Structures are given as structure tokens and as C-alpha cells.
Picture 1 (tube, rainbow, N blue to C red):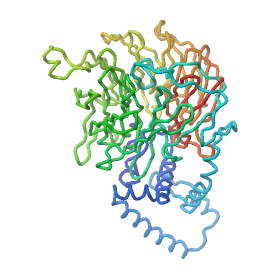
Picture 2 (cartoon, rainbow, N blue to C red):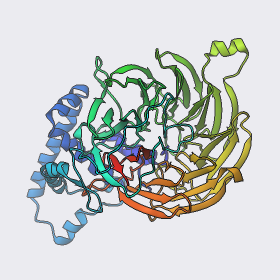
Picture 3 (cartoon, one colour):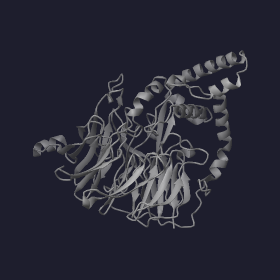
Picture 4 (tube, rainbow, N blue to C red):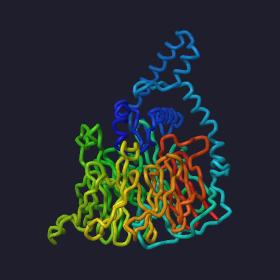
Length: 573
């Protein structure tokens, strides 16, 4: 994932300013991160219930608040004793100084802006507006085009729906999109939806992430597809221990009968993150499996088995796994768990497996990222003892890749497709390059590869013999799988903004997202742009480049998360 962010985040961590988000727009300065941290912290003071919960869990925050108060009192006294600043000095104070340590902020303006936003919150809740001026009611008004409930299925649903990762769960491809509803977890406009939702039987399952200094906080929720009305929300993974969810980047998966939701938790700097199983009827946690690392990839499900990768925490200039005082410096591993009981079946060491896996016919296909650069196929249904009795190794095959393979694995027929490349979710490489590699599903033998101008960090969406690839340089590329990945067309999304989310592909329409918050609708025949929709909230643009949720299309509706727009639903004609 975003290893280039780690070095820049060190100063913030040491100062206890909070967890840096898992991804950020290339070249983003630290100023928005600090401003966001201050805003969230001051905002917490206006929410007594959340303040009490936070202080109870982290009493040492009182000391920090006291120090901030004393420092602020001293600063005000000092400032009032000095002559009034000149216009030149006043202008300079509003400009960040060079380097991380020289950032200067007009805190009075920050406080006034917070108060202004609080005063305007009711109006924003009453009518969120798109860039084109179309109103979105917070009460989720009915759209002129009524949507049928999502068709039921007896198959498990994973990241982007299935192993083909096309994000199309059935029904027509909507055009002329208009907003139907927006949902914010806990009605908090600061909550972000980084992952991709999943839909089944008229219900939408998703996850949110809130940067809540000095940590991060997540929720898992279920809302009605037609109205956006909340059915349940789960925010505490262990009520007895009062243990909240950490920030969530992972996307939910459902077992075949739809009774269990599986999801990982944790952002890239998090340790001690769990794999979680939730009852879809009421949102109660059924079990958790602890890991010393984090689970950013999305779980894969088959039968009674769920598989997920626990990624390493790499720090420093060498980007090697680093432990903390408790010694949690593991390079990463893949775990297989029995859904019905929560019992761990296997744990296979693999460097940085932050790729979202596919689980088919008992074989798990997953990529290895930093310090690994591999794609592996693992026997996932048998324990170590059972494999030993059958004289079988855990790994069916292992294939080295030229660059870290962090993109979600796609299975198309008898091929395994994976994207890789230089660069990450934060910064482009000085010499960017990307690849799509096609491997034989049974043997791992390389069928072909396609070179691209930048890294492929998201899943490859497949329909029939066509694959749609989002490239980090901001382009979407269509390739012919029957012609060794021959390029059919390519289209730029939005100026130079990176394309980090996986596209949705219905066969005749492509839906792609740029990380600065735009949804682009493209004609699948030639890549021609048909529509362009702004996803973030009006008056609150996404400043961190965190519009990375991959869209889902189902029954004439499109669902996608955003940095400031919550989970949004659009309907089309």
C-alpha cells in the first residue's frame, strides 16, 4: 500500500497527532492532514458522548488537552503584548513555512471555520448538492426511477462482487445518473467511505473510516438499497472490552446464504487489527480473529472458509517491516478461518499480502506487495496436519513479479490476472511503469503481460474477453484478453488525477473514479466520456485524494463511496 507516506508520517506519529490516512493524493502537503486533525479534535469537544467515550478509552488525552490549553493561554498573552503585525507579516503567517516543522497556522481562523461549519450543518444536511446543482435530500427522497430490490443469490459475494471483479451485480447499466440518496455513518460528515460496498437482497453493506486523532475509528453498516435508510450499524467489535473498530479500508464479503459478513480492519500504520465476522440480521459481532498487523485487503469466501492477508507495517527509508516496543514486526501472512466457528485453519507467512485474494475450488490466489513481489496459489481448505497426511505443500505455485503486486487478484476463466508496478497509492515513481500479468490458473505459467505507463493498484474488471484497467497515471485502458492483452482503447479520467479505484464494467458501460472525487461514465466501445459527476460534498472538497472507493452497479443503480460525500447512490434512465 502507501509506503511512501510512512517516512513523512513519522513526525506526526511521534507528536501523537494521529494516524495518517492509508492513502493520499500524490504531492499532498502535510497542511491538510494537520488541519483535519485539529478540526476533528475540536469537533470532538462539541460532542460530549464521543468525548466521554474517547477519554475513557484514552485518559492520557486529558494531559494533552491541558498542555494545549496552557500553551494557548500563554500564546495569547504573548501575542497581545507585541505590536500589531504588519500586512506583510500577516500574509506570511498564512503561508506554510518550508519543511514539516515550519508549518504555521492561523488557529483563530481554524476555530471560526469550525463554528461556521457547525452552524451550517443543518442546511447541508437538508440539501446536499452536486456540482451540477441537483439536490440530494438527507431524508433520501424517492427517485423518479423506482429501483427493484437486488436479486438474491446463493453464491458468496466478495470485493467487486466476484472473481471477475467487474462490480456489476446484475440489472441494467444506468445512464443519465441522478442522485437518489447519501448516507453518512452516525450522520457524521467527517466519516469517509474508502472501501467498496456490496449489495444483496435489497440491502447495502459498507464500511466507513473516521480520522479521530490520535487514532482512527471505523464502522460497518447496513442500509436499504431503495431509500438509504439505516438498518443497523456496528461500531464496537467487543462490547465487553469496549473495543472500537479501527479505521476500515477493507471491503465487506458475504457468505453464500448471506447470513455472515466478513471484513478486515486497520489502516497501514495500525497494529493489532482483526478479521471480523458479523451477523447480517442485526449487525452483532460473531467472532474476531486477532492479528498483530492490519488487514487492508478484502476477504475472499468459499463455502465455510474465509481467507485474508495481514499486511506488514513498513517504516523508514528502507521500507522494511518494523516492530514497535511489543515486537510486532512480522513481514505478513495469509490466514484461513472457518466461518461457522472462527477457528483458524492455517497461517502462511507471505511478505505484505495486502492484495485482495480470490478463493476458488479450494485454492487461494493472492499477491505479495512490498519486499515480496509475488503471486501465490495456496491450498486453503486443509489444515497443516491434513496437508501433511496427504503429502501436499500449502503452496500450489509461486510466481515472482517485477514489481510489488498489491492490486486485487482477478480470475478470468483459466487465467489469473494481477496488476503491479512502481509507485504506490501516495506518490508516483520517478520512473513509473506498470504491468498486467496473465498467469495460468493451474500452473502459474505466464501467458502474457502488458506494459502500462504507471502502476496498476486496483482490480482488473472483466466481462467476457475484455478487461478494464485503471492506471495510476489517471488513464483507464481496455484490453483484449483473447489477444494477449492487446489494447483496445484508453481514456483519461480527470486531468492528471490518479485512478486508484477499480472500475465497474457492465459490458457496454464503464464507471471509473479519479482520486480527486469524480465519477466518469465511459462508453465501453471506445472509451468516450458520457458523464462526469462530482462525488464529494458541496463546499467540502476532498483535499486528501481519498476518493478511492470502487463503484458497484446493481439493478439500475450505482453505489460509490467518497472522501466527504459519504456513501452515495445514483439512479439512471
